[in-house]
View 1: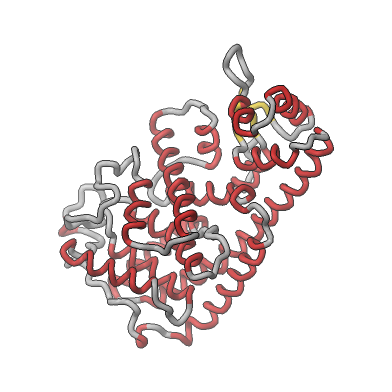
View 2: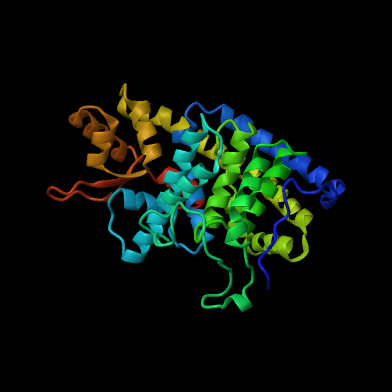
Length: 369
């Protein structure tokens, strides 16, 4: 097998079967528009939709073999001890979320650049598996994809030669800055080309999936870069990798684009449902916490437990920014009122750990507490 020789972007017009693509593209654009309309109506999306961000980090990392859950992330941040392997998996998820948040901040003022992509990659591999594989640098060696221990002769896929990689990446970046037939078709091509260029020694899949909402935000199809596909891709893992493989094996760009548009359509519907559940929970809790505590800080408290639904009482007091006695009184009232559960009781100087089960159940899509 020879190294893959990527098609220069944009794709030649004759490559795309627009008669097959136009209707699915219309459906995907319509659902994405509905989702973004909902997103625009949320006053504090970074706080209210933080469970979606954590879920994306978990599922994108799971596609690469990690076993961490949303609960594991929150428990780790609350200081709950785990075994060494679970800590490694959880740290990979936390790195992904950190990279995603910093990328959102960057794109408010600056476009996607190759140096930006390298910086995000460096954050992603900080102190986790892959930290010894040149984080933040494009590969300088020929790599390949195959079963562990497989020689290059038996590889499933061989990315382009590192000698041509910089040219291919510059062509990829130039394509991002142009206007193609349709933004979602362009997003599909952007993601697939990045995956096949495989510019890093490790972490390519996570970076490639992270780039999807960032690209749509840069193209102004999203008001916030908070549209995540990994839930759909994780459920359809074999199809996902199969369609990407068909591009290099037979040039089947249309099959991949159709799959990607279906992913956008279905995930937009799922996101709309989940966002509505989260928003309803937020509004219900805003009223309920006020009724229980009669506190002027009730909204601040709600934002805090939405942002960190498993937490040490000492962290809550520190981060909420109100008097300790007032904060602890509010927590006692919320436990008594059934809003918070005691995950771990306090003992001596060790603080209690509390959990906000209703939000965790929405985030995991099942009852976990």
